[in-house]
Image (cartoon, rainbow, N blue to C red; front, side, top):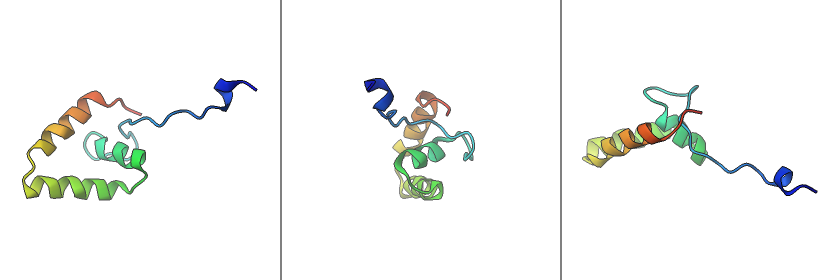
Length: 69
């Protein structure tokens, strides 16, 4: 038995190309964690409204470093 053939491919975070509204970051995070993309988007908006300015920075960093699917 070949070890490379039996090992599942590791889970990778990528930006969504099919389920995106701006850059695909929320869709990619939702796919990675196995949740609904709307839930991730609502959490992002709530974080922005509550006053976490780091949310914008985190989104921009994720946009910049996460590859497209």
